[in-house]
Length: 162
Image 1: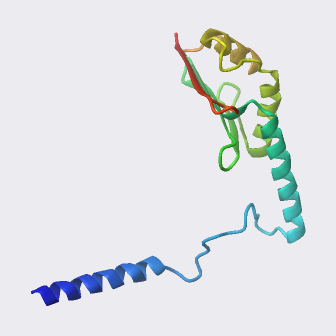
Image 2 (image 1 turned 90 degrees about the vertical axis):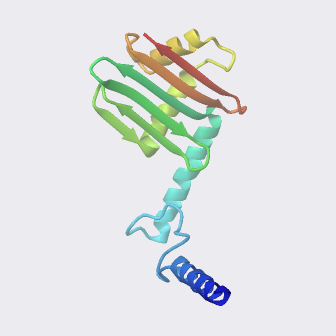
Image 3 (image 1 turned 45 degrees about the vertical axis):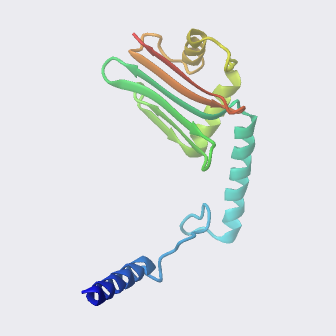
């Protein structure tokens, strides 16, 4: 009985090992930011864009900025800006039917962030008022939620329901 359990265990372990090996053609470490049909000279432009975005992000006040403002009629304005790990930026504006991603969103958000003056010590009401003004959003929202990760490592959350 012990012998058959050992054989069963060894067989099971071998099966798992074979499954883990997978397809030899699978790419485990694809080249960073490579785009289809792009030559090596094109990668220089991608690298330059990454450097510029990193410089823009480092000039900002935030490592993360997640904004969600809900309005009547299931309309929402949301921002997702993240420079921790992979840089990501998006603006979802259901009010005006605009959806902006990547470099365009990063550029627009950095412009808005330059206008924001609040700090981690600013009152919640002042932060909400300033964000609505800078992002040109109506004050007649149903729910406001903002999560901010400041450059100094401080994390703050601002919420308000009407």
